[in-house]
Image (cartoon, rainbow, N blue to C red):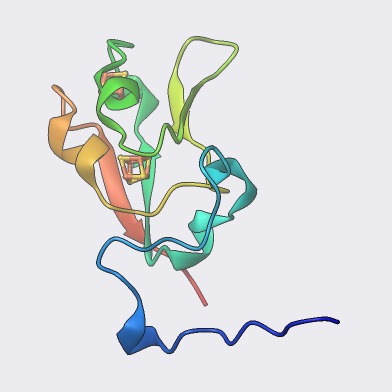
Length: 97
Ligand code: SF4
Ligand code: SF4
């Protein structure tokens, strides 16, 4: 005999309920949510790595020439990197449709 499990309505979900499994964040293309993206002006970048440290999504990558750039697959466009950059060399620009 099989049983069917009724899915709860959204109002019945517990506070803090998540659908994803622990450690599965990299499977989700969170960059789809973004309306702004960070662009680094390399001529002003001092390669300090502060943007890398502060990005809450670990969406900043170090490039082969030791600059830092956003991984647009995961970057949500929150702008924290631009806010924390010492030299203000990260500009948040609008995504085009
Ligand atoms: S905009 Fe936000 S998510 Fe994107 S790289 Fe900067 S800190 Fe990370
Ligand atoms: S925080 Fe700004 S200056 Fe520092 S590495 Fe990132 S982009 Fe360059």
